[in-house]
Image (tube, rainbow, N blue to C red; front, side, top):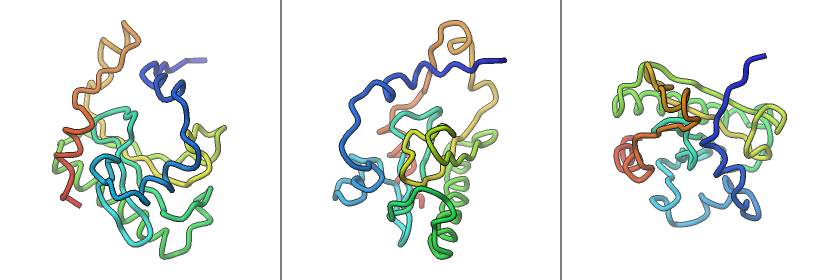
Length: 157
């Protein structure tokens, strides 16, 4: 069995989790820049991942608190995946990544950090983005601060 180490995620794992659902609470606040909300649709929104695997790691989430893909209405599902597609377009234009990982983790056992609110991950990837720091030192280098990424992406949706 091979192991993949992601020690940069320990901050998220160990931090005190707020009460309630972050994907329900953040869109209710009138603080999009502080909460890194990039876009608000009718049924879904785009928010930056606070503990990204790479710069530009985005989440698309429904406003409605649901656990799984099949609970989305047709309208919610269509907008959700339109925003996933639009995210790829914007990230290509802004950062010129070599590829993408798209992911949906349904349930804690599947790796969902927020397992009670359905959301999709869009992670831009670059050739060599897993470099010697990760291999030798168990350190992941994310070369851009969240505020810089937000500034680059805000308004492009």
